[in-house]
Amino acid sequence: MTQKQGWMIVRTLIVTISTIGALWLLMWLFSLTYPFIIGAILAWMLKPLSKWLKERLRFPSPLAALVTLLTGVGGLAGVLTGVTFLSIYGFQQFSERVPEWVEQSAKNIQSFFNETIWPFWQDVIGLLDALTPEQQATLQEGIIQLGTQLGSVLAQIGQGIADGLTQVALAFPSFLIGFLFTLLGMYFISKDWDTLAEGMTRKLPPALIERMEAFILALRVRVLGFLRAQIILMSITTIIVFIGFLLLRVEYPFILAIIVGIAEILPYLGTGTILIPWFIYLFITGEITFGLAIAILYLVAVVVRQSIEPKVLSFSMNLNALAVLISLFAGLQIFGFVGLFIGPGLLVVLVILRDIGVAEDMKSIIRDGLRKEEK
Image 1 (cartoon, rainbow, N blue to C red):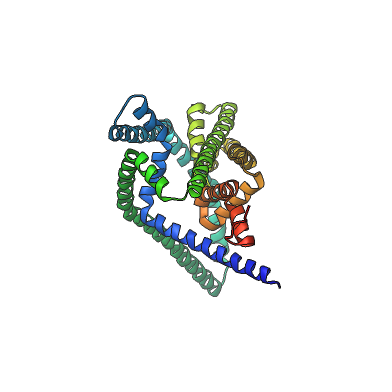
Image 2 (cartoon, rainbow, N blue to C red):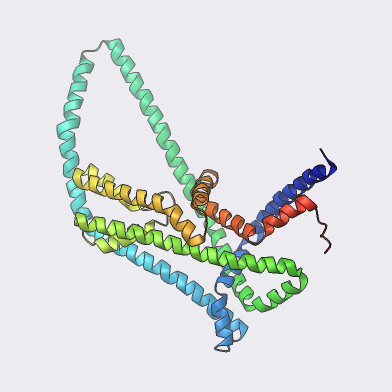
């Protein structure tokens, strides 16, 4: 091994350790300041509106920041209100049919009990009478143990649900506090954006400022691409479900298709949030044909979504389709269902760092050190 190769190995270790340390430091700082980071991101996203208010309408910075804040919060509230209205409307339509469904379900369950369960039970009793006392005692003991184990499993499930609800209840006040600080941070950052940007420009090296501006520009393009991709996927799912509902002659197909399409944003389940309980209920109530049709519609929506998602994300975010697929799977394995968003997000950051030259700089440092070539 030559001296140059030895120094390259040392520099590689230094760069690797420094990168891991920087990531750990960033995660630690994020855990302490995340409301203000989120507020800064929201202020940056709404910066064009704030700039327009100040330049076109001559609003002072505090008023422009307040109007921007109210517009952002109002827009979010409007979207949530619309989704809530559609959901309530859909559930109202369902609730009108609930009495009929309950009555039909009761009849089907009673018929199933009379025609299947009761004759089977009579056969079991006949078999039990034919057993010896020792065999009956052994069978009863096994049934008791099975019931005890089943009760233990149900108790664990109930305890898990109770613990989860408790954690949600305990986290809710912290969420409200974080949300309040996010709004305050968004307002003050939006109000003093120009001053903060000017101070940062004076204190940081020009090369770093140039890289940060390139990173922000690329991130904006990719974030908008991600949002566009999600809208495309939700729209495609809505269209597929709407066509299926029309063919099946489901009442209120458009409203129900929109609700299912909105549910597509939920990781893991997506359309299954609505369609899985639906076809299970249909199977229970004896509507096997209709239940199979809804199940097939769900499978078609899932297959189409899984087939086109990597392509849509790669096209909208200018990423490799295979890389997107790997990031989705890796994020799912590491972070759970939230990883379906974290994985592509980390991929976007890595690709942007490569595009703006950070990866090349790290290679140069490993290869040549911090020395600059003389021209």
